[in-house]
Length: 176
Image 1 (tube, rainbow, N blue to C red):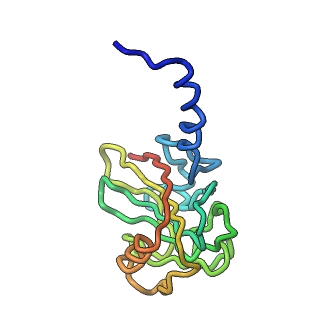
Image 2 (cartoon, rainbow, N blue to C red):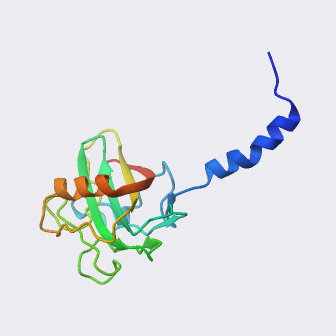
């Protein structure tokens, strides 16, 4: 087995640290791969249906706005889409997923999710194995997508993908 010289390993350390830095999504109340708190679970499953607080760091140069989604890949189900989040925002407060309550920044748009509700709807999978819920923040290259909230989820997601410079994710689980 061949070993790298110590000087080579040490010279590569700053490059590895730089590569590890970048666009990051985290939450003061969610832990990566942890269980979703009951306050964030859909009301039909006994929860408070409050969107969690999210924060992001180190967006790429050229970012002009953000979008946030929550997706259940185990059920192919969209729980939340929010876009046209102002570039000055570095996160969303708890409850920002309730449209028109003043908790979301500026002109944030929140179309209907797969429950048929505008804004956030928390987890409520069928009994059985826990489902995964992927929160994603997208750094976008436009200040606004130009898509109104009454447009389809599909149109909003296509616009987000088309204008994404980078994305960061945070995954949690919940089941009953």
